[in-house]
Amino acid sequence: MKIKQIFHLVKFLIGPWMIIPLAFTIALIFGAGIYEWPESSGDYEKYLFFQGNIDMGGACLFAGTLMLYLFFGFTAAWYLVLKLDELEVNNSFSQTITKAFWYLKFHILAFIIGGTMNLGYDARVTPNDFRNMFLLAGLLYLLSIFYICILHKLKVSRNWKLILAPIFMILWFAIGSDGNTARAGQLVSSETNPHYIIRSKKHGIMMSWHKLCDSIFRDID
Figure 1 (spheres, rainbow, N blue to C red):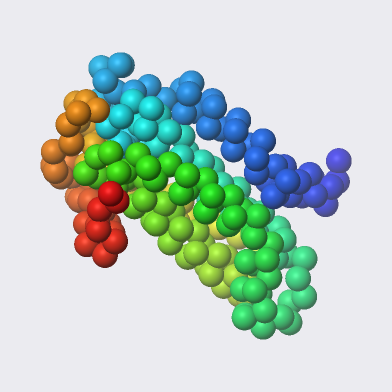
Figure 2: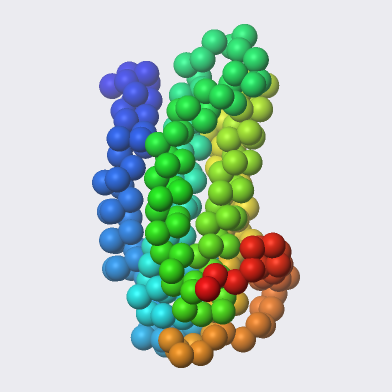
């Protein structure tokens, strides 16, 4: 198979027509299969990045949601790189940005629908984990689009663009590896809220994001 044919196949597999089947597959495999609710496994330091919400169902949905954010953060970034390579090199930066949003319109729609459908869980507890992580993922996606467009305008080679494109997802996973929420690493039940404890400098960065979001948007009632 020629390189060009391989890239066409990759674009199909990570393109908008595969969003729904991939989302269901990833959410089912990770959220309902691989991920273990800490209170049932007894290991509170496992899957710290994905721990959030205190309700068992909400916790599993939260874990699946974050996995989808990461997965589509990577694949949408690679898809955008491959699609932008089809553009004329003399397009202006504003034209490139416009095209980028057009190419990702179905990804963006799926993100908005999927990211807001579980916000009701935040109304049951003090932390607003679903909302705040939705806002963070949205910001990182937006930064990724502009960043990839800059790489395109700088005429960085395709291989390097594919390597560099998901950099914001990589940074998020690295910083959030010690926990994205106050609930990370704690024993909680559906009747109690997690304690506000900073586990590390990395965890402190994530908690600062929650403080910022909560101070602007307040609590979800």
